[in-house]
Amino acid sequence: MGKFLDSIMGKSAPAHQDDYMELDLASYEGTASDEPASMLVKVAQISDIKDTPRVKDEVYNGNVVIVDISRLKLDKIMYERVLKDLREVANDVNGDIIGLGDQHYVIVTPMSVKISRERIGGA
Image (cartoon, rainbow, N blue to C red; front, top):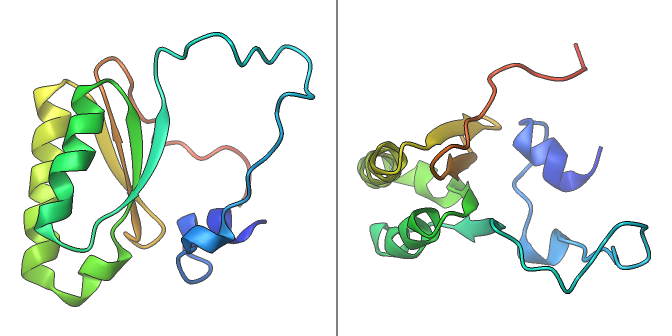
């Protein structure tokens, strides 16, 4: 499994921006880069309460956001405040929120996108 997936599943340290790899999807059949997407999956990192408005804006704009909250683990009060804000935005838009990887990541979804709590495959 890759570093990113391992960190989501709680098997290693969180991935850094340098760990992400851009994939050339244009060579795959059926990919049309000219078509606008109705929803994007964004990746964010929150290290302070001041970082939450951008994440909230993305969810209000209808995007799914995967949030790295690993830096918040050092400050329990800040961690709780940020999670409260993210829960509120998910509730406001009738979306969903779930923590992954020993709570290193949180996924926040917009309206009509729910997150299954069932794992596919694995033990």
